[in-house]
Image (cartoon, rainbow, N blue to C red):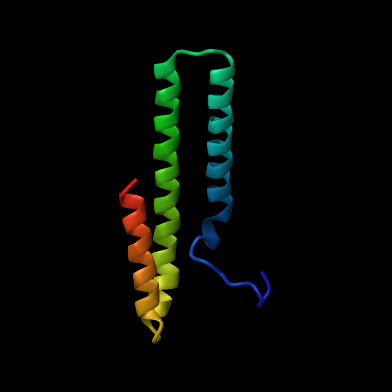
Length: 97
């Protein structure tokens, strides 16, 4: 990574996170195939619930890195308040889903 690019809290987990994203992408494509194959409604809804749970877990992992890296770094400077406000707004949106 060059000095021009920012390092974010998830950088040390990039490969693992990308694997999870790829798995989610495959699950979503699987739902499309289930619909094309006229699968039972409840099976499709169950698969969608699993996708939502996996997406929430991914979000939590990325947020944890954000708090440990971006927010903690900002707390050491005068930029803490905007980062905390941004975090609280993001958590509010995530919890309302």
